[in-house]
Structure formats: structure tokens, C-alpha cells
Length: 313
Image (cartoon, rainbow, N blue to C red; front, side):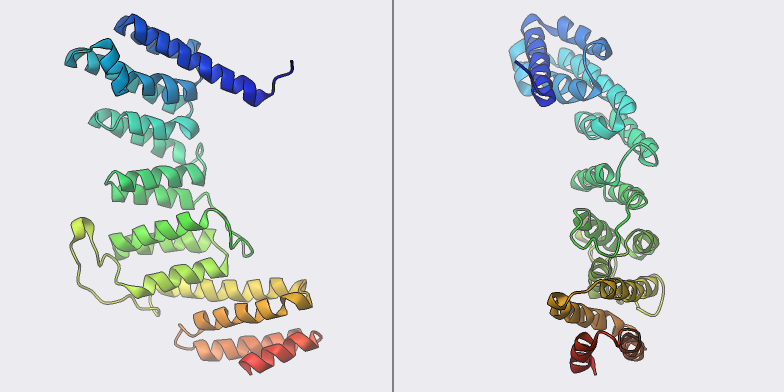
């Protein structure tokens, strides 16, 4: 009988669970011995997600009738295992290590440092955003922000990726930065501009940034006084310019291979573009020039340009 790779992996995971369960039936020494030599028995993922997690579960503590000293000794071995796994395979084990080390300050700090060390080369933006959200949930917004900025450096959203799964993470990162204050927002916007070329995503971020003052609802719910940020000054001016530029580039890209059935959708896209143009103090002039250029460059698309004239003059 031929078995698929997924079936083999499932069977291996079940064998690992069985081995750990058997060890919990014998006592503390057997479990400790398994954790000390985990690298000869398990993959890093198995060691963190099955072995260490099982060892630190309440059911194991109850089954073994452990006293406080024994509990801490076993938990210490499990945390050491988790950190070793995170160093060996940060992509798959870093979040588990952080979770397992939550109750030990030094171990938690070590796990966090492992993530930072691996962030530039060994982790994807998806993994970093996941850990960043975890950090915010645990009450570490500045660490969440740090990881979010690192994640942004790995990201590249092109003009036509307006349904990309990372968009929610980008919006969350910008909202987090905005909640922390002007300095944090000013630091993340250049990263957004560099990584995101999708006009609709940029305009959404821009709109959100103009609704409230950065840091208005600070840490611990304290409200900070302050004015809304100006669109004529950094950092929002850079974001506004990038958004307008993205709309222009996307418009030309769409017009290269547009079919009549997409004309009405394209007109609505231009309407959204106009909303962004008008946020600039000279936006009306810019948009008028933009439309005039379209009518000149694409005058061969007579029906489409007629629709453009009807809507925008």
C-alpha cells in the first residue's frame, strides 16, 4: 500500500505523541531525558509543538503529581528545548518558543532576540507579522511595531495586487504605528511607500491616517492632545505623493490591455483616484492635467475616452 508524504508525516506525529505520552506515564526522569536528547529523536517543530507543549501542559503536571520544584525543573528543560529549536529553525519554532517562555522573563527575552536575529534573513514577512500581532496581544506594542517594520522590509505589493493576503497586515501595522505616535508613523511610512505600489491600499492607509491624530489614544488608554497631521508636510506628504503616483502608474498599466467590458470598472477606479488627488492643495489642477493627458495619449480608445469626458469633463 502506497502512502503519501502527508500520511507518513501524520503517522510520525502520532508516534511522537505516543512516545511522549508513554514517557509521562513513567515519570519526570524519562521526560527530562527525552528533552535533553531531542535532536536525536525529533525535528525542531516536533520538539516544540508536541514534546515541550505536552510537558508543560496541566494534564501532565496532574498525571505526574509534580510538586512546585519538579514542575519548575521540567518547565526549565522544556524552555531550554524550545530556545534551542528556535535557534535551529526560527521560521517554524520562534512563535512556539515565545509562547512556551512567556512565564520566564529571561527565556522570553532570549526568544525575542532570536526572532530579531533571524528577521533579516531567516523569516518571511508572514511569519514576522504573525509574531508582531502576538506581541501586541501580549501587551508589547513597541516590540510589535519593531517586528512589523522588519516584516515590511520583506514585502513587495505590486500595483495589481489589491487582494493580496498581506494587505490586512499592512493596514494593521500602519494602525499600530498611528496609535503609538507621530514618530512611529513617520518611520513606517517610507517603508510602506517602498514596499506597496498598490494605489487602493495606499489610499486606504492615507485616509485612515488623516482621520485622527497619531497617538490620540495612547498606551493605557490615555488620550493625547494634538492636531491632525498636515498633508502638506512629512510624513503624510510622502504618502500622498506616492498614492497619486501609484494611481497614475496603475491607470497606464490598466489602459495597456483594457477590454470594453472593464470600461465602467475603470471609470470607477478613476473616481477613486480623483478623491486622492483632491487631498492635495493643488489636486484639482493635477487631476485635470492627468485626465487631459489620458485623453491625448489614448485618443484611439474613442468609446472609453467618451466615458471619461462624460464623467470628468
